[in-house]
Length: 189
Image (cartoon, rainbow, N blue to C red; front, top):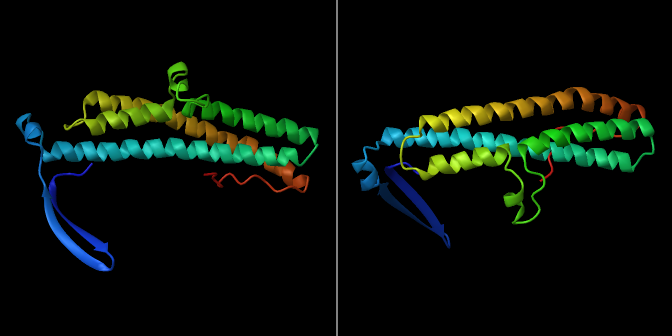
């Protein structure tokens, strides 16, 4: 969303640049309801906080999926029973965390009706609610954000624990076997 104020836009088409100044004014209905620019600034700042938490959730899912894909790759290239056991354990623990952050059972358009939404969707829904109102965010919105953000933080900490402990042990074994360790920072896209 864009806040009321004065703006300048520059367009370049076929090598020719043009600049135009313009002003975005407040919705007169919102002004009549007592909404101020400060209210809209608060909404904007809060929406950015929410967006960042959605990004945290989605980045964590990408990271966990990358780790699991790398584990699958290492397991496919080895017949070591200890490696298989450790790799499956790390993969399962990460899948548990992923399942709390993201609804992994969504495969079709109908699935969101059949399976409950998870943290990333709950936080994103809150963002839509906040951005959709031309007003200051409600206290309930802030409270819901704190609850959901706290729940997400717990899952992110669990993911970090799996990476720091379980994945570290798995990487030790991979090195002992002469295999490439798992890169926990590599993301699949």
